[in-house]
Image: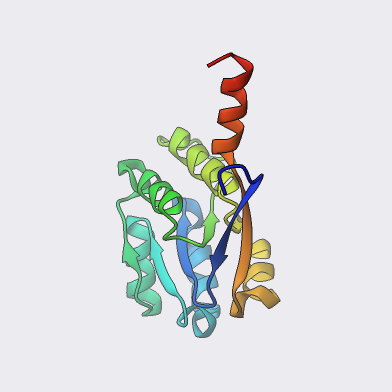
Length: 159
């Protein structure tokens, strides 16, 4: 495993989905969740502070709440991805608005890419992902073995 180029992880049929939205996108995410609540209720949902509370209040689905994004919620979610407890991310972000926690947002987007986590950043992509044939079955994701890459770099430097 340590010498493999990729490490395989299984995203189970019942997925752990995180729901995040910037302030200007919260209403759009709530509407999307409400429209898709029958599909989403079969999965484990979590989200950042206000977004999670709004979904619980307005849609009625259970959502585990992390801190608000600017208060570390994005970093908490990134840590859950690294630990393997989040499989799937819906993040309606506002690319035109400056965010006080922009480095955390970028870190979250980056960690989704590093760990090969399906990530929707808008309604269209979320619709495509939710209606994918993989949504209701197990899926094998292949994550680059960065430990091997680091070992190879260390050899290059004679360490």
